[in-house]
Image (cartoon, rainbow, N blue to C red):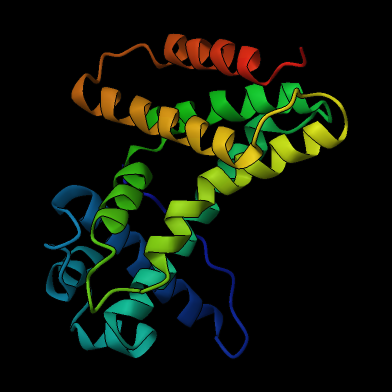
Length: 208
Protein backbone atom coordinates (compact mmCIF):
# COMPACT_ATOMS: atom_id res chain seq x y z
CA UNK A 1 0.00 0.00 0.00
CA UNK A 2 1.37 3.40 -0.96
CA UNK A 3 2.12 5.80 1.87
CA UNK A 4 -0.08 8.87 1.62
CA UNK A 5 1.56 12.11 2.70
CA UNK A 6 -0.65 14.88 4.03
CA UNK A 7 1.13 18.21 3.68
CA UNK A 8 -0.59 21.24 5.09
CA UNK A 9 -0.40 24.31 2.86
CA UNK A 10 2.82 26.15 3.63
CA UNK A 11 3.29 29.90 3.64
CA UNK A 12 2.71 31.17 0.13
CA UNK A 13 1.27 27.87 -1.20
CA UNK A 14 -2.29 27.30 -2.25
CA UNK A 15 -4.22 24.21 -1.18
CA UNK A 16 -3.83 22.89 -4.74
CA UNK A 17 -0.07 23.39 -4.71
CA UNK A 18 0.25 21.68 -1.32
CA UNK A 19 -1.80 18.74 -2.60
CA UNK A 20 0.41 18.43 -5.69
CA UNK A 21 3.54 18.47 -3.54
CA UNK A 22 2.06 15.75 -1.33
CA UNK A 23 1.20 13.69 -4.41
CA UNK A 24 4.80 13.91 -5.65
CA UNK A 25 6.29 13.09 -2.25
CA UNK A 26 3.99 10.06 -1.88
CA UNK A 27 5.00 8.84 -5.34
CA UNK A 28 8.68 9.34 -4.52
CA UNK A 29 8.36 7.34 -1.30
CA UNK A 30 6.68 4.48 -3.17
CA UNK A 31 9.29 4.58 -5.96
CA UNK A 32 12.26 4.50 -3.58
CA UNK A 33 10.65 1.71 -1.54
CA UNK A 34 10.08 -0.41 -4.65
CA UNK A 35 13.11 0.34 -6.81
CA UNK A 36 15.72 1.77 -4.46
CA UNK A 37 17.20 5.24 -4.15
CA UNK A 38 19.41 5.14 -7.25
CA UNK A 39 16.61 4.06 -9.57
CA UNK A 40 14.12 6.63 -8.26
CA UNK A 41 14.58 9.03 -11.16
CA UNK A 42 12.36 11.99 -11.89
CA UNK A 43 11.05 10.05 -14.91
CA UNK A 44 9.93 7.10 -12.78
CA UNK A 45 8.45 9.39 -10.14
CA UNK A 46 6.56 11.30 -12.84
CA UNK A 47 5.13 8.04 -14.17
CA UNK A 48 4.01 6.83 -10.74
CA UNK A 49 2.51 10.20 -9.82
CA UNK A 50 0.68 10.42 -13.15
CA UNK A 51 2.26 13.76 -14.07
CA UNK A 52 2.49 15.09 -17.60
CA UNK A 53 6.13 16.16 -17.25
CA UNK A 54 9.14 15.92 -14.93
CA UNK A 55 9.21 19.72 -15.04
CA UNK A 56 6.31 19.70 -12.58
CA UNK A 57 8.60 18.06 -10.02
CA UNK A 58 11.25 20.67 -10.66
CA UNK A 59 8.69 23.44 -10.34
CA UNK A 60 7.62 22.32 -6.87
CA UNK A 61 10.96 21.16 -5.44
CA UNK A 62 13.63 22.75 -7.61
CA UNK A 63 16.23 19.97 -7.41
CA UNK A 64 16.60 16.37 -6.27
CA UNK A 65 17.97 17.74 -2.99
CA UNK A 66 14.77 19.70 -2.44
CA UNK A 67 12.64 16.64 -3.20
CA UNK A 68 14.71 14.42 -0.87
CA UNK A 69 14.37 17.00 1.90
CA UNK A 70 10.60 16.81 1.58
CA UNK A 71 10.68 13.00 1.47
CA UNK A 72 12.88 12.59 4.55
CA UNK A 73 11.02 15.13 6.65
CA UNK A 74 7.67 13.63 5.61
CA UNK A 75 8.71 10.06 6.47
CA UNK A 76 10.20 11.14 9.80
CA UNK A 77 6.94 12.97 10.49
CA UNK A 78 4.96 9.79 9.77
CA UNK A 79 7.26 7.84 12.08
CA UNK A 80 7.02 10.43 14.85
CA UNK A 81 3.22 10.39 14.65
CA UNK A 82 3.26 6.57 14.79
CA UNK A 83 5.46 6.63 17.88
CA UNK A 84 3.47 9.33 19.67
CA UNK A 85 0.12 7.63 19.04
CA UNK A 86 1.35 4.32 20.44
CA UNK A 87 3.81 5.37 23.13
CA UNK A 88 1.85 8.25 24.66
CA UNK A 89 -0.20 8.13 27.83
CA UNK A 90 2.44 7.70 30.52
CA UNK A 91 4.87 10.01 32.29
CA UNK A 92 6.91 7.16 33.76
CA UNK A 93 10.28 7.08 32.02
CA UNK A 94 10.73 3.32 32.36
CA UNK A 95 7.31 2.72 30.80
CA UNK A 96 8.12 5.25 28.11
CA UNK A 97 11.35 3.38 27.30
CA UNK A 98 9.45 0.10 27.04
CA UNK A 99 6.76 1.63 24.83
CA UNK A 100 9.31 3.39 22.64
CA UNK A 101 11.28 0.20 21.97
CA UNK A 102 8.12 -1.82 21.29
CA UNK A 103 6.80 0.87 18.97
CA UNK A 104 10.08 1.22 17.07
CA UNK A 105 9.98 -2.51 16.36
CA UNK A 106 6.27 -2.42 15.45
CA UNK A 107 7.04 0.34 12.95
CA UNK A 108 9.23 -2.14 11.04
CA UNK A 109 6.18 -4.34 10.45
CA UNK A 110 3.44 -1.74 10.08
CA UNK A 111 5.24 0.84 7.90
CA UNK A 112 7.65 -1.16 5.68
CA UNK A 113 7.72 1.44 2.90
CA UNK A 114 8.88 4.13 5.31
CA UNK A 115 11.51 1.83 6.77
CA UNK A 116 12.90 1.01 3.31
CA UNK A 117 12.98 4.68 2.32
CA UNK A 118 14.90 5.72 5.43
CA UNK A 119 17.40 2.89 4.94
CA UNK A 120 17.83 3.69 1.24
CA UNK A 121 18.36 7.40 1.85
CA UNK A 122 20.83 6.71 4.66
CA UNK A 123 22.75 4.21 2.50
CA UNK A 124 23.02 6.79 -0.29
CA UNK A 125 23.85 9.80 1.85
CA UNK A 126 26.94 10.40 -0.30
CA UNK A 127 24.83 11.25 -3.36
CA UNK A 128 26.14 14.67 -4.49
CA UNK A 129 22.70 15.54 -5.85
CA UNK A 130 20.86 14.48 -2.69
CA UNK A 131 19.99 16.42 0.44
CA UNK A 132 23.30 16.74 2.35
CA UNK A 133 21.59 16.99 5.74
CA UNK A 134 19.85 13.61 5.32
CA UNK A 135 22.81 11.46 6.35
CA UNK A 136 23.60 13.17 9.68
CA UNK A 137 19.90 13.63 10.46
CA UNK A 138 19.03 9.96 9.98
CA UNK A 139 22.15 8.84 11.82
CA UNK A 140 21.26 10.81 14.95
CA UNK A 141 17.45 10.89 14.88
CA UNK A 142 16.64 7.60 16.58
CA UNK A 143 19.55 7.57 19.03
CA UNK A 144 18.86 11.20 19.92
CA UNK A 145 15.30 10.41 20.96
CA UNK A 146 16.45 7.58 23.23
CA UNK A 147 19.28 9.65 24.69
CA UNK A 148 16.91 12.44 25.74
CA UNK A 149 14.55 9.91 27.33
CA UNK A 150 17.36 8.16 29.21
CA UNK A 151 18.92 11.41 30.39
CA UNK A 152 15.58 12.68 31.70
CA UNK A 153 15.00 9.37 33.47
CA UNK A 154 18.39 9.58 35.16
CA UNK A 155 17.66 13.11 36.33
CA UNK A 156 14.39 11.85 37.85
CA UNK A 157 16.12 8.92 39.54
CA UNK A 158 14.35 6.28 37.43
CA UNK A 159 17.41 4.85 35.69
CA UNK A 160 20.80 3.81 36.98
CA UNK A 161 24.25 5.20 36.23
CA UNK A 162 25.46 4.80 32.66
CA UNK A 163 26.27 6.95 29.64
CA UNK A 164 22.95 7.98 28.03
CA UNK A 165 24.70 8.51 24.70
CA UNK A 166 26.28 5.04 24.68
CA UNK A 167 23.11 3.32 25.88
CA UNK A 168 20.96 5.19 23.35
CA UNK A 169 23.23 4.20 20.48
CA UNK A 170 23.23 0.59 21.72
CA UNK A 171 19.41 0.54 21.72
CA UNK A 172 19.32 2.09 18.24
CA UNK A 173 21.77 -0.53 16.92
CA UNK A 174 19.65 -3.28 18.48
CA UNK A 175 16.57 -1.97 16.66
CA UNK A 176 18.58 -1.82 13.43
CA UNK A 177 19.41 -5.47 14.07
CA UNK A 178 15.71 -6.23 14.34
CA UNK A 179 15.17 -4.49 10.99
CA UNK A 180 17.89 -6.58 9.34
CA UNK A 181 16.54 -9.80 10.85
CA UNK A 182 13.00 -8.97 9.70
CA UNK A 183 14.20 -8.13 6.20
CA UNK A 184 15.93 -11.53 6.01
CA UNK A 185 12.97 -13.40 7.50
CA UNK A 186 9.55 -11.72 7.14
CA UNK A 187 7.99 -14.46 9.28
CA UNK A 188 10.01 -13.28 12.28
CA UNK A 189 7.88 -12.74 15.39
CA UNK A 190 8.58 -9.06 15.97
CA UNK A 191 6.45 -8.90 19.12
CA UNK A 192 8.61 -11.57 20.74
CA UNK A 193 11.73 -9.83 19.44
CA UNK A 194 10.60 -6.54 20.95
CA UNK A 195 9.89 -8.22 24.28
CA UNK A 196 13.44 -9.60 24.36
CA UNK A 197 14.86 -6.16 23.65
CA UNK A 198 12.70 -4.55 26.32
CA UNK A 199 13.78 -7.07 28.96
CA UNK A 200 17.43 -6.62 27.98
CA UNK A 201 17.38 -2.85 28.23
CA UNK A 202 15.19 -2.73 31.31
CA UNK A 203 17.91 -4.69 33.08
CA UNK A 204 20.67 -2.59 31.55
CA UNK A 205 19.12 0.74 32.59
CA UNK A 206 17.72 -0.24 35.99
CA UNK A 207 18.98 1.30 39.20
CA UNK A 208 21.35 -0.94 41.14
